[in-house]
Image 1: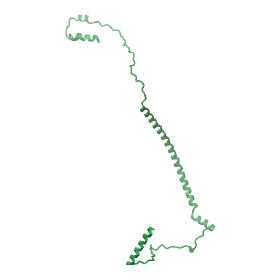
Image 2 (image 1 turned 30 degrees about the vertical axis):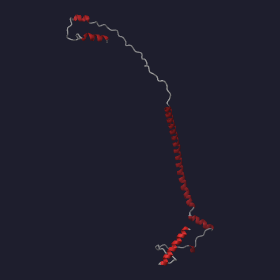
Image 3 (image 1 turned 90 degrees about the horizontal axis):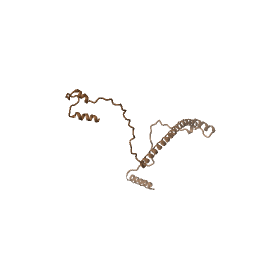
Length: 184
């Protein structure tokens, strides 16, 4: 690189190589030109890789908030696992209770059918009349009611209404008697 700088300086004010300026004879020019000597081939040096010097920070204390954060995360993880275990147990209990409910409903239907058969009124009447504790009603005990006529109401009132001043006195007496009865 240093030779390149020298060449540049040398040609800075004078002629530039390859220019059309004539500097003298060509022979002189050849004399001046250095002979090309073969350069020995030199391997480039392999630089040893050196580790860069790094400043190492001294080990400090662990932050209390970091420890508290890790503990909180651990507690949350444990609680989450525990809740999944509880959920699976409750789910299995629900399944077993549902199967028990279906079996109980079928048993209820069977028992209701037995109950209806056990309390059949014709069977009860036959058993009670057979041992003599109950007898069939006779013709004198049977009473028929005719409901074919339209509805009508008959009021049986023994009191006769009184009109005039005497009726007013009777009404006030009746009201006063009812009030006294209410507060007794």
